[in-house]
Image 1 (cartoon, rainbow, N blue to C red):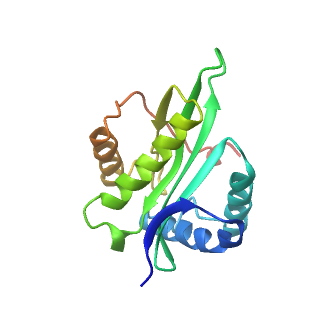
Image 2: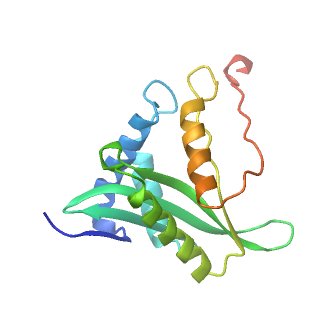
Length: 166
């Protein structure tokens, strides 16, 4: 088996990363609603790779991707403050021995945010079932992890089904 490392994803590896995104969606229970559109995901990854305000890191073990984190440098609309936002963050369930891989990915994106001049970083997690009700187990895991990384909980997400208005 090859070496384990965190590195930037390469354009020729978009398919591999898309496969891991599909595992992420499966692990999150998004098989009956909010399903992954592989073509759309591939386009988003392509855009992310060339966007200087975005970074995508993968955790590679041997020739397999077992985790990833995607983050973007953004500006607050009312004052221009630059901040970093974790957009996606996942470690394959079979690779979650402890939280070492997650921690390494988290530190990689945090370091990138510092490098590009972000004043703070934020992460959010919104996951709901087909009835638009929260997946409390998933949300609790995310809340626990981010608090362990010294992130403060600040705010809420709200979701509403609009199908009945169509």
